[in-house]
Length: 379
Image 1: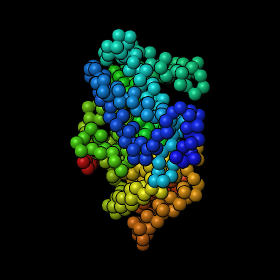
Image 2 (image 1 turned 120 degrees about the horizontal axis):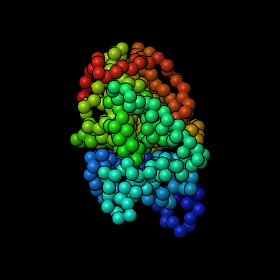
Image 3 (image 1 turned 90 degrees about the horizontal axis):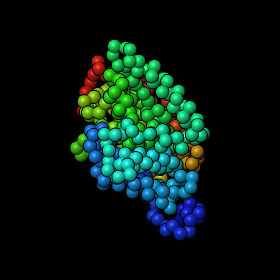
Image 4 (image 1 turned 180 degrees about the horizontal axis):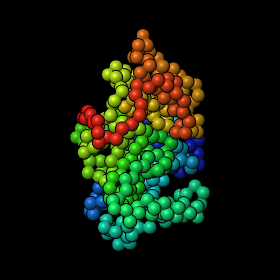
């Protein structure tokens, strides 16, 4: 057992020592749980009853996240090769706790699930205790939001409005690692109901990658980094919300990925694809696998690659972070040793979620476009 693990468990000598997960094992646990969330959401919005096995997965996952490998500050030790590293999983834990209370309230005292009565659940009572300042501040903020939305959905207008929102910090709370920035059930139900009842079109527009529909045949999240359609618990193909990534350059429309690639030359696409392949190899090594869970992780967007190199809590060893950045530069040289397409490659090193710096600001394309024109279906 590592010294870090001893410290993590020192507060409770009665809890058994447990084997630490690898980065991939941790992600696999969370993605299995998110599959259960999708099934639960689909059942509820279809006025059906979720399977007990799916709700059980949520409870089991919460128990795993709160076991002896996680301390009182929600810091969990996982293995990156032979190295034991801490990650903050507060958002993942709180999201599950809220979901379980929400689903219990839908079941009521009788235990009989009431999918048709989810509007009767007082969601504010579930969320208020988790406000970072106070419950009173929570209700003050809710009141302001209600006033805003009442103006937004002005019933005197002849048509319903269009609603476009972001992902991080709006549809859900910020998470310390993008790879497990997973949408809870209660959030998906609320967004689905709002979009269906009060808008003629609702869309999520985010800077992150779109990703791959996790419900499609032969889908596997192994050794790849997720996009927004893999993080949401809303239905992708037939749901009430449309999803877009890469600042509007890629959309999921009728179950297909649609890309707006105007202004991006073929050699730019090729260079970025080869660099992404190189980074996949780098992150599969024991030394650098932890960077899959550092901030934004690795995000391959339509016109750039974003790499997380440090957390907001500075949990990554500074020497290792610097070494990782040098490894990235070396892979860029492999892809373009003569620097013929260097001006077409944009690599963004991100420090946590709130600070970033650009090491090569020449991008292979920029801007966004409404997907309903100039479409190019690539899948």
